[in-house]
Length: 240
Image (cartoon, rainbow, N blue to C red; front, side, top):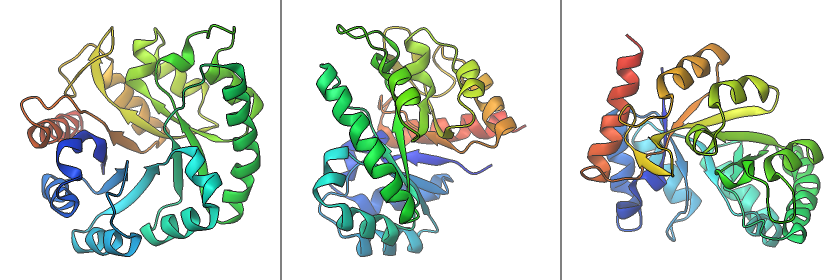
């Protein structure tokens, strides 16, 4: 099995030495990376590093206003990285107007990105499964009012009181990636295999469904590099 790593897991290092982080995760055994920022580096420079270390880009977390502000630039950047996946990493949704604005964005730009060979997805946190003050469940609104794809963060779903394995089955027609992540109720994270989230069951379901897995684990226990190595070794142990 090949695994991707969300580079926010190493946020203490990526802004200082992105190339070094890419080299490190490749040495650990990860085959692809999911970006959460580029720290002033060009797409061409980053693609060169990916090629140098035998990595691919499984996707990016990109805030949606950036796509509206520079659509052509974002398309070109992602094509240079060699990915087809643009994932919106949540939003505030504190008012119904903010939710409606995102729905409008998704319905306008999902097809525009698809025409360029790129796929738009939404990444959840816990709050999208919990009714807002204005009475909406954001995840349901996005599922019912748009056609965009989904990246299920299995820990945040668990933290919201949901069964992530059941959600994977329920959302299978829209699910293109998952974040495999561990932790405890209340939102306290942990390295894979060291929390209370049903990581092994999520893993088995992802294998069954053929859904690519992206590791995210940003607790730095005892440091970020050791933690992402611990996560990789745990996933490899599940293969046996």
